[in-house]
Length: 157
View 1 (cartoon, rainbow, N blue to C red):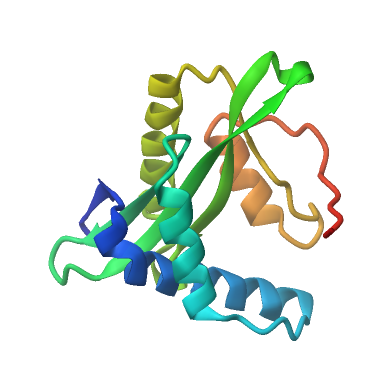
View 2 (cartoon, rainbow, N blue to C red):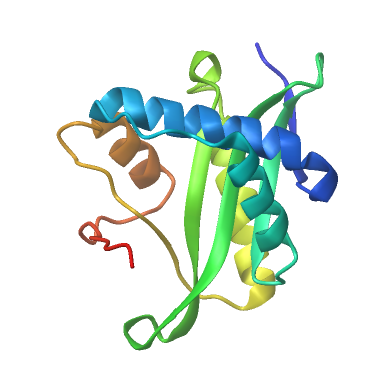
């Protein structure tokens, strides 16, 4: 059994966060057949920039025996009238593919929810992947208290 701890990520953890986010992006590329090029230095620099904001946080799961980073979650503030003002959005969540279903993701969400409570946010959203292609992901979030509310669309400008 894997034992782990969760800690709030700092600027000193930027390399670990970047590595885990790049693993997440690799997984997404593989599942979608995308050839999106992942720039780890850009990921790390973006994390450092976002961390300077008080409405963003990241948490890392570490294996207590090896001190290896095995999971990450990031959460940021969004604002919308339909959500009653400020709320949180889980922007990334990744757990090492060999260590899934042992409680790491659940613990990462628990820490993100606590951050949201401290900020006074009453709701948390997460982008929903395609239900037929990602059924385990949808079920994971539902088991952790999330309700299906549709998916999101995006445009880059």
